[in-house]
Length: 133
Image (cartoon, rainbow, N blue to C red; front, side):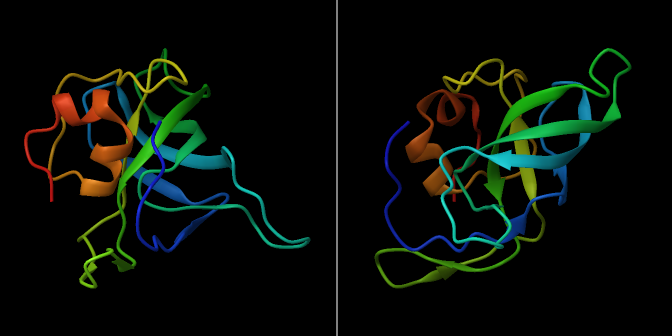
């Protein structure tokens, strides 16, 4: 996992519901915790584009439901700033389910675009992605 460049706004707090954009079997995830997120007392941990987080599977295949899986956020609706100065936002919030904490995706097909920040930070996700914005 590489460091991320730019100011990515962490838009999805703990307990947020996020759709998946892969064919791993999970449809709806609930954000449980964000890896490596340090915050002040009383503030909820939040995830932004490219962040690794643990999520509970709420809807999907029966063998995946009610399990905690590692995931990466690849799109967010809240705009964030790139080092070039432009601001980027997507139509929806979307995540990808991973096999392990190292970053290998469980699904083989991703629907929709993947952000450049997530692709740069997770090379295994970038290999499977068809469109990187």
